Image 1 (cartoon, rainbow, N blue to C red):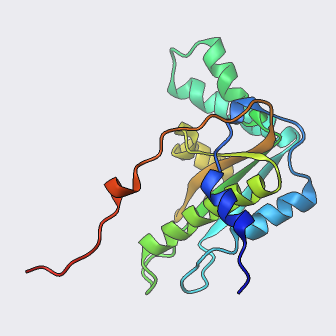
Image 2 (cartoon, rainbow, N blue to C red):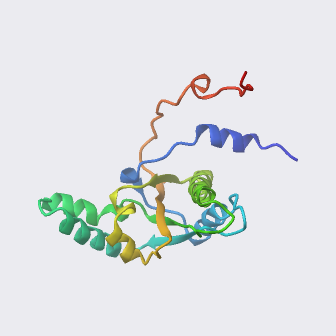
Amino acid sequence: MPRSPETIELLLTRRSAKALTMVEPGPDESELQTILTAGARVPDHGKLAPWRFIRFRGEARAQFGAALARIYAAAQPGATEDQIAFEANRLVRAPVVVAVISRVTPGIKIPEWEQLLSAGAVCQNMLVAATALGYGAQWLTEWYAFDGEVNRVLGLAENEKVAGYLYFGSESVPKDERPRPELSAITSDWTPAR
């Protein structure tokens, strides 16, 4: 199998961009299809595809933001106008947003945990693909990823949850590096018990 030093370099240097600093352009239709296809290429025990995608582009971002603002204001009666406006503009921070929806099938031989992990792998593959295409990408799970009313607006089924909202766009500022764990602190060799 051929080696790919460029892939290794990308994996070793990939860093999330901040949705707040993303600008146009975002991925076009062809690039977005590539990102989604990369997401769907993850390990998937049982070939269940225990995930799906909801895309937010153009006006849909502001329309969904209006629903977020309404839900937030109802849940937070003391919220200021600025806070409500922030919620309304959440998805317009980036040109393209994709919600990755985890959909677990309970009571089958494939453990639910594996199905959830597969959805997480989808998110990571999509971040790497977007970065490889030259875009900034960020995976967020803020309050609206866990809110029952938001899930209703999304049309989620009983067995579905938001694995994350993935924001894609061009970067307007350089990314800063963050501290990473020392491998020696998180790696051990297994030895049999005595």
